[in-house]
Amino acid sequence: MLALGLSNGIERSLTAKLDAATAALDRRDGNSAAIVALERLMKEVEAQSPKKISEEPVASLLQFVQDIVSLLEGAFTAPS
Image (cartoon, rainbow, N blue to C red; front, side):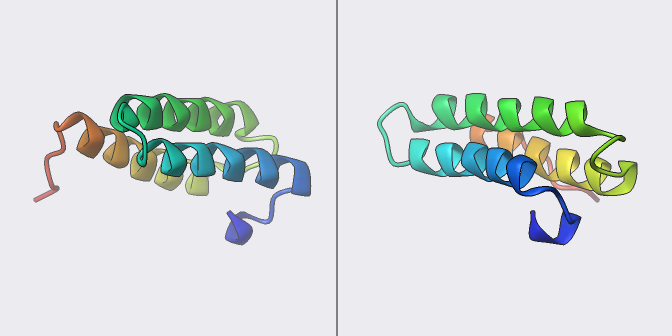
């Protein structure tokens, strides 16, 4: 998140959602709780684009997070 040059408030909010996803993986219902946290992260990133986060990093970040969600759902297909 540091590389995006975000304001402290936005950076903290996005980082908190990542931290929540990471912490969820340590729990019994981890995957589903982590997916919810990551979906919240994606919604916030989308809400901040393009006014606070430029479109190029948003697209890359959203694809990365979606790939993680797909892994957690067991539906990830590696790009060819």
